[in-house]
Image (cartoon, rainbow, N blue to C red; front, side, top):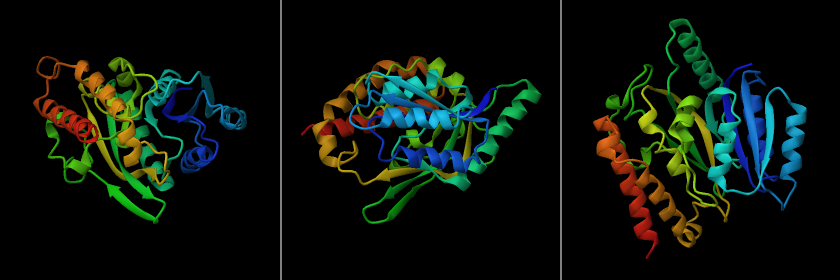
Length: 286
């Protein structure tokens, strides 16, 4: 059975929190059989992540697939999930994050609508579906909501030229993106192994392959903030700035923007996004 969406969950020593992530998808989707979850155990050896992945797959064999690989890093695990995806769409959910149940119901119904309309018309479903995300600061129980209402039209299929102005806090990060699987595969993303911050590659390299976009204005993705070892922690980022340089090189070599990107609006967006990556490299290299 072709699934509506595949959720990829990369797991590396994630036993402490992966259950919450998986449950949020199962419960939010009402255990729908057109939803697939691919748990990728990225060579976990310090806890029982591999066993947990297998247990979940055994409990819900029609929904969950467990994949085990040698440790390759976050990006390799994400793309492994893409390789195993049976869904028309793909969304990555990191194992310490989760989705909002009510938002997921609305989101899934919209994806189903795209697929049904495409089946009736003979056209392709929408290439890229955008949604909001929320930073969940667990240490002080506060939230920071990120939406695109001022930058992206809602309730209609658009192209890159329809995008408005993005604030620095509004760029299209991995948490906001749900790609059509065929678009992701056609992009040929080559993730650097054992590298942090590769979500920037995921939110950059496939974009020139995207022709149609739709913005679903729901707060779907919940991004956990609060672990001392998180890659976004300032001290951790400073110690791993070489990883940002690796990511910047991948992005730089992916395209010659004036030769390879047809849309002027997308070209401008990609130049701005790459400039931010280079600014981070510069600031944290000091």
